[in-house]
Image 1 (cartoon, helix red, strand yellow):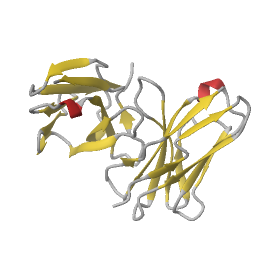
Image 2 (tube, rainbow over the protein chains, first blue to last red):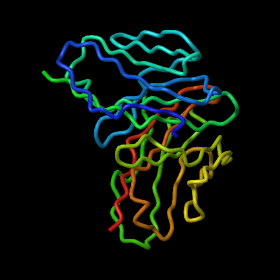
Image 3 (spheres, rainbow over the protein chains, first blue to last red):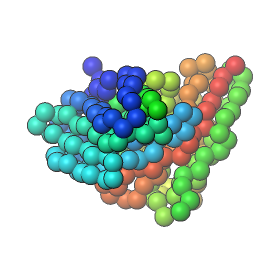
Length: 112
Length: 113
């Protein structure tokens, strides 16, 4: 079983919809949680960076972390066709290791 | 603000050849990371440097792989005697010291013929 599980999709939604993307994880040492967006043949682009449990909002994006359930979410409001990409969750502990552990990514398609 | 730069963007080579990739991190970042990503998967960690010191290596980094960061600025990743299974996107990231987010380049796509 992988340390971080993420539904690969594809997830197809109409323009303007609210999108919910999720990851579950098994390692309770993870403390920092990230969401990256990756367009085809490009590198991952950092969207959100959060520490421990709680919510963080940035424009149309909201990240939620529930450490008790080992569950993180990314919500996208008023989705646009330009949001069509693969979304990767990533996490890291504070044990001194610097390697990010990624989910396998969810492919999102926003239909105009 | 210049981001992480990787060269070349795409490398095609024959099995058994050696290849070298270069990464230029964001200028003030003293940490530099290498990851490998295959189709449909998330990036997998290979190694990381703090300044010129290589501090962590994954077991994925076989003895055919070597990475350097000689002056604590740019880094190179070399793969010797390439194999079909080395075909992947090789990503470089950089960050400041501490629990800071990692910023990625657009990668070098390696294709083995």
